[in-house]
Length: 263
Image 1 (cartoon, rainbow, N blue to C red):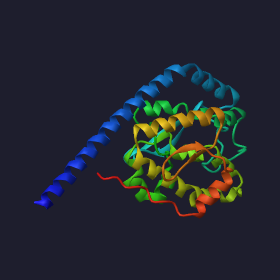
Image 2 (tube, one colour):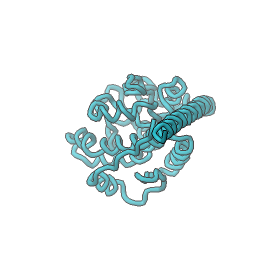
Image 3 (cartoon, one colour):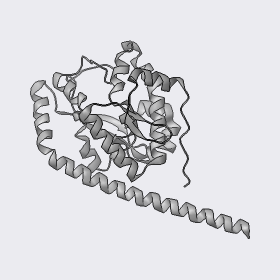
Image 4 (cartoon, rainbow, N blue to C red):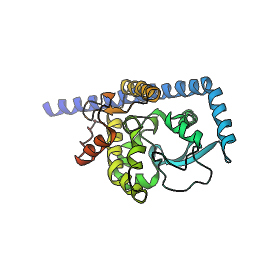
């Protein structure tokens, strides 16, 4: 008898968690649709002006598409304003003082304005306002299990824990590395930290967390703050420690395991 009761309780608890997760997912998707639609309407004029400015400054399209891995492992094209000279080659990572950037492109990167077209990706259901960072398949394949089992269960986001934690310091960190070692440094030092943060986000995903991330994204973009993400409480705050020192300490210590959530 006690065994049956315990089993029944676990079934009820599991169903309750699934219902709660489904309801939270619906609310988050509704926020995505409202936020993306409102953003495209209210920012229509700035978006149009930026597109014209990009076209006038240098030859090439106003937008460019970069292939990324989305929910359930499906590839899709992330839309961004073109920030580099048309036909520029080199690593698929933006460095501090990157010479491939146009003058306008450097300004767009500084204030994250190159990502405004991704509101259309959100409206189409390919992305969320908040979620794991959309990655290139080359990097996803290096951590296949973490992505397949956890991270790719949700849509990638324009912003998120990873985007905030590495938003302004990543280009600085990569810019300080020998150009021939940029890809290796990213793969061995930065990517594992990003994967861990994305796993933690998926495990703790909620309306409250998403709203906190959106607020700190606004603060970080306007004030150009580096944001610190507490790996245990997920509390967001202004980072006081220099970016390079923080990254070196984080990479030197093993990342914590992402908390598990019952199905």
